[in-house]
Image (cartoon, rainbow, N blue to C red; front, side):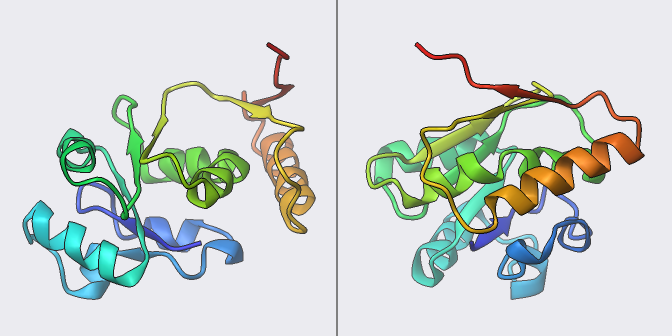
Length: 153
């Protein structure tokens, strides 16, 4: 998985993500700090990254230009870097599915703190490890994260 974190997210997020996110980068680490959105877009497109941002401008660009790159739009209030990492980890299966989909340009992650486990998603070998890690971390930190089955429509 190759995520490119925008400048409105701390570069420290990379240290908080597990090994399955090892190919992720921050724009600072690829020499794009303080570059305009068009340059970041072009870099992500040329290098196979999905952009993670709070910035609605990238969503607008995806509507005008199409994709790739894909956009993960964090539509939350102010969050700490740890809370952003938590949202990314909790949504790992959804993010993988989104990146693999050929008909989606933007994934919105919101303030919800529940993880909806979609049993219809194709299973990945590291899926169960991530769910176990999330549950263990939640219990250690006495977190209010809830693991819920996705309701059937």
